[in-house]
Image 1 (cartoon, rainbow, N blue to C red):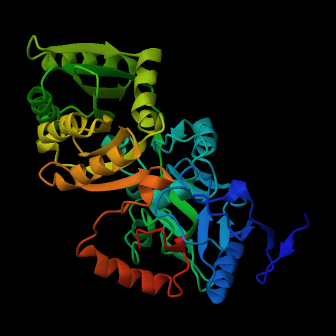
Image 2: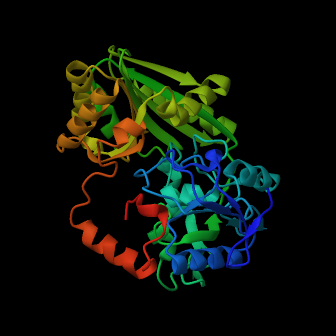
Amino acid sequence: MASIIDNAGLPARPGVAADAVDDVVPGRVVTPESPAALAAALAMAADAGQQTIIRGGGTKIGWGKRPARVDLVVSTAGLNRLVAHRYGDLIAIVEAGARLREVNDALATHGQWLPIDSAFADATIGGILATNDSGPLRHRYGTPRDQLIGITLAMTDGHLVKAGGEVVKNVAGYDLGKLVTGSHGSFAAIATATFKLAPRIMASRTIRVRCAEAAEAAALIVQVSASQWEPLSFDLRAETGRPTIDLYVRLASTPDAVLAQAGNVAKALSVSGSVTVDVLDGVTEGELWCGQVADAWADDAMTLRCGWLPASADAVFGVLRELETHEGVRVMLAGRASVGAGHIRVVGEGLAQVRALARLRAAAHALDHVVVLRASRAVKDQVDVWGPLGDARIAMDALKRSFDPAGVLNAGRGPV
């Protein structure tokens, strides 16, 4: 089918089933190939009042509320370049549509990487920032928001706005990068992002601690968090049908240093006969961490993102047991032990998933910010995927009016 030329002078095509957002097929799809063209597309959409969604690799396109309609999808597939790699300064500038795995392949030529986890092979830089998606590497490196030092945004008035800079220590101007990271494309479109990088890992080993009791696991979390160790990652895992709660401490350094550290840490964590301590490396270690990132998305399940106080880990484990007992669902929690953040996978029939979500949100003594990332259409039609925003709603609404006065971005899917 011949391309349609829209009012911004951009090639456009009619939306098809493969472009659907929660089963809603968009009216048109445009693919800008420059930041200026991206801004022009948003200005055209705002002028026409078109409900618009920005799409990267499409790996998280179903996150958020189901839209009533989608007039326009703006794809960042044409913005997929590594603009600059200043390896002497450990800095990279990347366009929003570039895939994380391809960026890291390029950075590896100079022994560097952008240390971000993603469960999705086609995840793009823009999508990762828009959702602030993170995994086990958050323990040492923080979230994508923490690694961002500069950004170029395309606004709905057609302008490009730059914030931050190209050096790590830069505090000039408003930190718009941190504001839009995690906004799910509700304020502006990310055109380019500047990151601080890290040297690639030379060697690592993981200490796996299997605890028979929740209280024991909680005590070990406090012990590791208060120690002088500096793990690359420190994770926990609890799962229906698994008799233990597992803790994973990953150490990374030179090969000799890792070998010595792993022995010392394993000895320190062998506190009683009721815990089992193993040291993993090689393929076994790699598979374990791949599972920590990806297993929340396995099966036909509801996937939630949540937070908790690390000191309240035993209460979190108790709530998970209640879900199995009272709602008949199977659950798995994979998260950052000393940060208090992660994902819960809930497997069960639709009404049981709805009840499980309500029970989790009611457990304010244990969990906070329980957000539905993935669920069936039937479940999403019965719940508020974002949950109550409280006093933050007023500020978020004001920001939305300021950045997107026409109210077209993200097609009402939230969080603002």
